[in-house]
Length: 82
Image 1 (cartoon, rainbow, N blue to C red):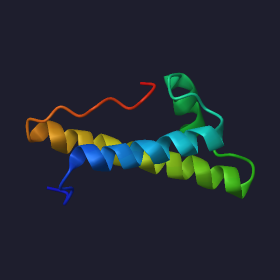
Image 2 (cartoon, one colour):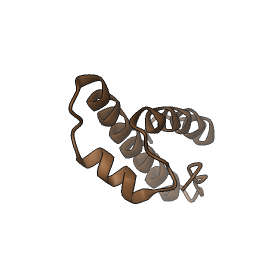
Image 3 (cartoon, rainbow, N blue to C red):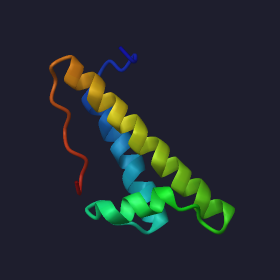
């Protein structure tokens, strides 16, 4: 286990951050192609590239938690907009 005692609360907090950083990056979470393009393409300035990298990391963390939940027989909630 990753140490998350309450997966749903942890995912809710991560999702809140994902929504925040997606907004900073100017991507709509319902547009998977835009998200993929955003996290694949470095931005010109440091602040926006930091937001992009943070969004990428949060999405990876969410997937890891989802995998862990599924491994325990739990159904992870959907990310808002997905």
